[in-house]
Amino acid sequence: MLAAPDCVAFAAVPAHLNPVIQGDLWLEWIAREGLTALALPPEAGGQGGTLAELGRAARALARHSPGAARVLWAQRLCIEQLHAAHNRAVADYLLPDLIAGHRAGACLLPCASARVPLAARRLERGWRLQGRLGLAANLQWAGFVLVAPACFEGGRRARVLLSGDDDGLRRGPDRSEADWHGTRTAELQAQALFFRDDEILDAEDMLPDPRVAEVDRVLRAALA
Image (cartoon, rainbow, N blue to C red; front, side):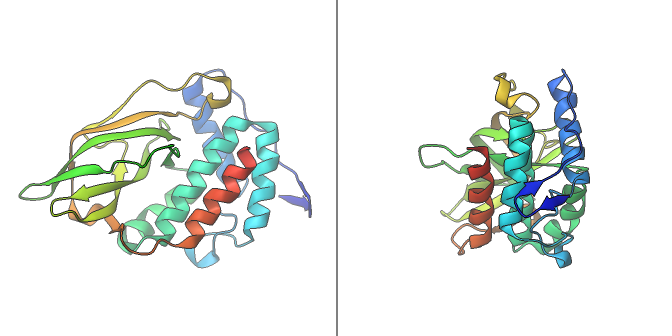
């Protein structure tokens, strides 16, 4: 994939008029080009490499297709979030499908104000989540997972894993601007969404892995 230190060569980025089909094509293509595995350790299912290489690849992709680069940002950042999660059972189960592009990794878009976490109410065998998540990218038709903050009874905060097929996860219409075509970016809201304890990734008061923030910074810089 890397043709020279400062030059990245790709196969032709797929194009389709239907944004639903376009997004799934991009996701498959990004995985085939090795971008989901780049700068991820081999022991996690990646191909190794540096964040500088990931940044160069993302910048080259953004020049070809800004929408595909946004899908890469969400997919690769979701992979990094799961790679850093303390719930290894969930992470190890999902990472192979995310790296292979068989499942989409959605991400919440940065917001100007502090994000209000989902409110979690205790039930006999789990929790009910309620609240507005805001805009999220890469909500692909093939199915997606999403890392989101939640506030549990007693004030405990944690990061939880949501799935696109969860009953109670509602989405608005896709953003229609040209740069967002195919990225499947839309507003998400949880309405009485049932949630299990084993879907908690880690406590939000634990020190975050700095690699997650660095991957986010590198990929968003490429979009700029």
